[in-house]
Image (cartoon, rainbow, N blue to C red; front, side, top):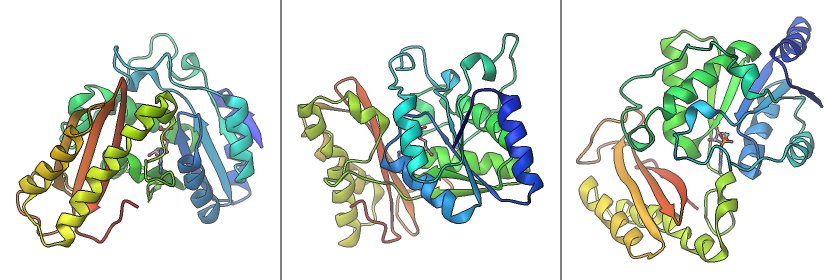
Length: 286
Ligand code: AMP
């Protein structure tokens, strides 16, 4: 497995792979890998000949009060994990490599970025869309793999790829969970044992909604309220948002007549966790 730090190096690698007619799968990450990331890489390995991942904690997608500086980083461990699932190359650029002095170009996806995480993290998706565009331009993959854990992000990338005529396929991979149902996240490492237990309230909220829909409930206000009531009952949890939108359009919906996305962002202590489920399609959060 190769590790490249510069755009020129990874481009050279990609060029040689392409010349031999091989199909390239790409998994962008911020590192501190876990099973969720590895699942994306396994999917990439199954669908493509060569798998490239990026590890880049992208400053432009973090707000000024967010955890950019303390975001966990461990390249040695990440490299071992990536190699264990057959990754062929890691692109791990510095911030200066991606945003050299004088940098001033950004990608803005409108409308679907105005709600959910886009509302509570202003500028977040502008940073995501910009860095993903740059990574796509550098690596030029045939397929790129994103997790359903970040449902809105996957939709934003799909929208961007369609709108800007980018010639690759976006594949969305189901959320990978811990055995007790907590969605895997690099940020779970911030949680104390007590907070880790409290964090199960996210999945509990999704489950209650899932059960309500299975029992015939279609009123999204009622479903949302059940989830809110469940989360506020956990003293360590503070709701950022609990919202339901049509899926994949992310339009407001009062009565379910097709799939809807129930998305949560909840702070447990100072750690902001997100999770989601698509209701109305028999999706399961466990
Ligand atoms: P991140 O390193 O958090 O930027 O995540 C990189 C990619 O891994 C994104 O496409 C995420 O949606 C995906 N991902 C993160 N956690 C999970 C998970 N628990 N299950 C599936 N995909 C995930």
